Image (cartoon, rainbow, N blue to C red; front, side, top):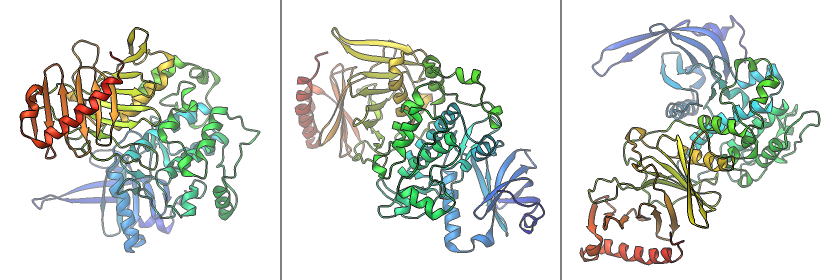
Length: 555
């Protein structure tokens, strides 16, 4: 990473950079930057601190000599990196400010991470304590969840690309090898990555690769933190690749590693990418749930291990864990304009990580006779956990496969838990920091569902009676997704893009057609409207609902 002071390459870089900005009216303005200390290099780029003379803000700047990217393919690759990185906004991803160029260089201005990388930390520390690895990896998993939800594969997860700010915040950087998938199920073919971290399917090349290669690198990173060196490392790259293809590694006897850590690593480092756990499964694994995890580590850990007193604050402390996790699992939510999202009727396609796409409803609630509460987004994890959903008032809920339900208020400060008992449904309300230990995983799953949804928190309103409406039942048919809500609303989202919302209280029906036009009718005369498409859907819904009610629990 080091560059000799006074070398020919370094002298080529100007000490002062002038950025020229041309406004629409032709006016030219300039910004001046002063080069600071050297931070590192990789590929064609060298990275320095950069001081903006006007604002005194300090950034990290990647200097890319134009002569090094004179070939069309090299420039396209750089432009792809810039396009991907500038589109990202997440607390655990290095911030992209802007880029510009002059005759000799392209300059990429990035967030400065003053405490350098985990590679530097491990070089000083040799290996990390488990509580540290948990903290770093939990932040990394948040970044990867965000990337994968935007169809982006990083493809270069390694210690050197996990950066730390002056506040010890974890930031994933370097998107030089990142790829954007154009459609669900697409698999990339380019052989790329860092030898010790590269996934076997990338080396094999037969079936391409997707999100699972980031999962593999996550496992390698975890092993490296805890053991002190990568699991497949040898003195020869070809031998390393051979060991990767054979998944040939072991846990050294002289390093103490918990059974939970070994279990998680072993589940990730498998040749068949379809057998690796998803990110959701990883962060609900016992390795991440057995104790409280610090959101931010103290700066002293850059150089020395944590004290036993510090570790004891987190070990075997579920109460502390739930409080800490409720905060550290919060994630920045992207807030699009209303309804500028995919419609709910699009067929759900499972991506290569085994996750379902977030579905959205087209109902905007602007019909005065329509319901005041409906499901705007949902995500189907029923093969593993259940169904998560977002209400129009920004309450987030889930129906689990054991038929229990949970729903939060819009501020995520309280949760309402519904279970079945001898006397019917039992409803309990808890503060997010004080729920029982047995609900820990369900609350964490609710956090995961929250991360998948996009909404405007400013528009949230709470339920007036304190007890929140919740999803009681859901049903998937060949033609629709059907929701039965506790406020006596039935919502039917058809796969062709149309929707029905039935209210047994107001005795009205709201219909959204394929063109997203809405109309409302009294239930008593809806079949007399003459609208053939509406009538067909009403009859289908009636048949399905009769069967659904027969199998209901009568509550």
